[in-house]
Image (cartoon, rainbow, N blue to C red; front, side):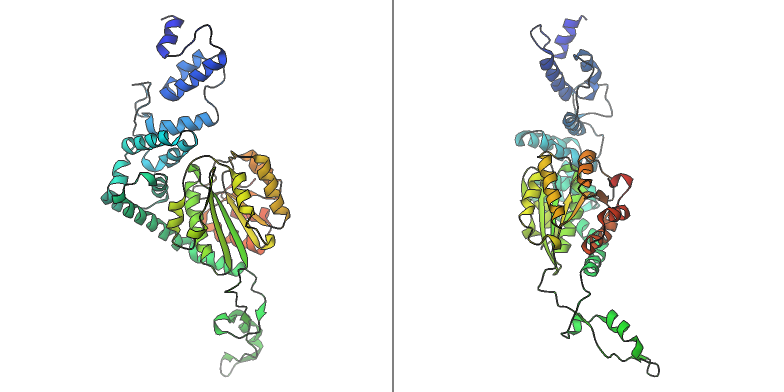
Length: 418
């Protein structure tokens, strides 16, 4: 076969009038259509030695490959086809990444194919199957990514599955998180007004040890000490700004539960925001079941961190009593300079700013190291945190501990701190 026949066979137009740029665009398009098995042949037709796909194109290719590539039999066909490769928990990220690259009608087709071809139909469409599924964070991430596809007959069971995971996580972290926040808040000042529920027993005993009656074996207190009644006043304002891109699914689940715990604490005024290229203010839901927050999240899409930070900034009234928690892998699709300027202004105003690259058991995530380094230069460390370290993190931040030193204590691993 001569070169002309090769080009005709591949479907690539290589006529004399076509320029190299157009040829490369066509080759990229065919590479995305045919899949990885066509890479070598198409690359040989390329004008130049650079890879056919780069950056976001690779993410797009991986998203398509998770649904259409037959990883078990790559040599049978060069065209994308269904495969059983990864099981459904592992494709949640790819199911959401596609929103970044395709319009809604195409997204619906791809997600429909995912349901049919990756073993998700029975999971989503049969309540009996859902009832037998062990609730874990990967399964719940997949359900949330595909919640619009779940039929009415399965929605109640899907919600029950999400609720079961939420309940399990709440049992793990709620007590320690509440205790950490309560202990960190300024409770050193005592109230002159006596109130049994507000009795500071620890201080009362310590201050009256000198009055211990050995004969009766009891302390006879000269004075009782009481905590101030803070049920009315909100001591701190917490703003939780969550990146809802597909790669952040685990972090969104943990962060939503954290936010719902904060919302029930009388001493905290809590606001929860989720973002991609648009903003979803979930504050009204955060006082209810955290499952409501999770079903209000739209996993996937682009990322405009700058836009979300600007939205959150309008709610800051007392910077020195406000904590802003940004949970994101920092792959910014918005205006990076604007983001850095806003974070710098927050820091300078006395605001406590935390940037979490992940809130997950999995370890240090993939993140934009260059942007993280620029944020670190502002005095704002970026790090990953496992849920069991979350109480220590929040308590330290509320007490005003040095955040760089704090990040060293609670980080997931060396790459989590920049």
